[in-house]
Image (tube, one colour):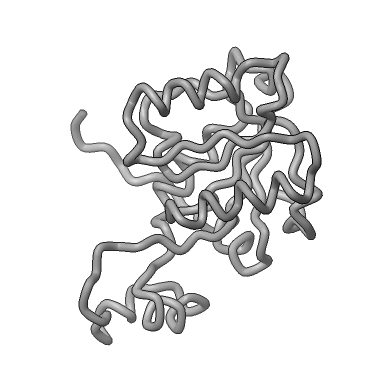
Length: 177
C-alpha cells in the first residue's frame, strides 16, 4: 500500500476504482474520463443485468481498446474474471440498509474516524472481510498483472489507513464450508 492518490489524473490502465453507490460510480466514471482524455471506463455494479456486467468485464479485459479503467462496486467479487492491476478505493463508506438514524449502540461499533459520517450519512465503513475480498481482485494469477502482484490504494488518507488496518486483521476462522 502506497500513498493515497493525489488526483484522478493518477488513475492508470488496469485500475479498478471502487465505490459503493451507483450514483458515485457514474460520477467517478465522468471524473476519470475528464481527467484522462482518451481513457474510457467500464462500470460494474450489482443491479446491472448479468449480461451487461459480463459485457463490461469483457470490454475492460480486452487489451486492444480504450476501456482501460473499471469503476465498480463490491459486485466485482461476484464471479467475474477481471484483469485488475490495482484496486483504488474511492471511499470505504457503504450504505448498510439503515433507514432510521443509527443508535448510539450501533455507532459504538463504527470505527471512530467514521462515526460522524455514519451518523450523518447512515453509512458505515465496509467490513474487513469485504475490503480483503475486493483488494484481492488486484494482480490475480493468469492476468496481465498476475506476475508482479497487484496494488491497493485509496483516494483519501483516512480511507487508506482504514484499508491498511482491514488488510492487517486476521481472517475469521471457517468452521464449515
